[in-house]
Image (cartoon, rainbow, N blue to C red; front, top):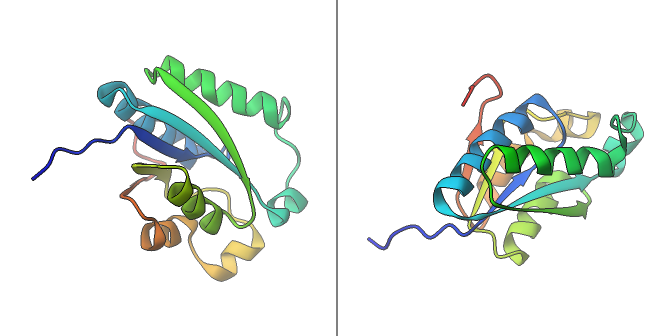
Length: 141
């Protein structure tokens, strides 16, 4: 069996506790593997309508998460943005962005649309072109 060569790991972030758990695991994997970490923020119309802007603004929050990933050991951290429904946008980014692994929380922020259609993580696991590692928010790495 050929060794796993995960050089680009995507961690979708929505600033939730579950996304924080995913970030901790993704940053640790990047530290161990020397991989690039891509923090992916998906801006959906339903989420924007239902939420207040994050404290410090979106750019400030993404910068803070990037700094946290660096403090956790990830040496190369980039930020990407996408639009649309998160489950579709994450899979599309992984498909077109040369992503080797997706690490994400199992219970992110849920808007009305997702209560009706199901779990974003479940959809990503079913449709992603690469392995997906899901992290429960209660798991403390």
